[in-house]
Length: 147
Image (cartoon, rainbow, N blue to C red; front, top):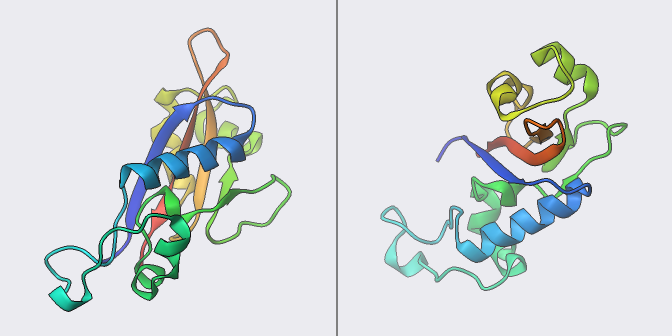
């Protein structure tokens, strides 16, 4: 299938991992992901209905190999002091924000300048975005999935 990028905006909350988990749950429940067992290229004998749980989805070997091409392919937000880890989300650091945009008070207008910070397949990033009043307003999650 190839690589695919994804990006999501969610309302701000201090707990970045909590925001990620809520987004993952909403994405799964909404069916907004690639399910490897459906579609024109899947032989009829291999087709399966969408799973009812993430555990069931990830237990499927076809899904394990293809991924979901969505936020479901990342599982946690890392701390700033951790090395980048596959299938995880790394917050944008103050230094990265300043280098990419000239400021550490990011807004939606800065998103295009930030997107290059997620370059490798299987890795995600996130950034807190601020409103016109300077307060945190949203979290932007983005990254790349795929083979």
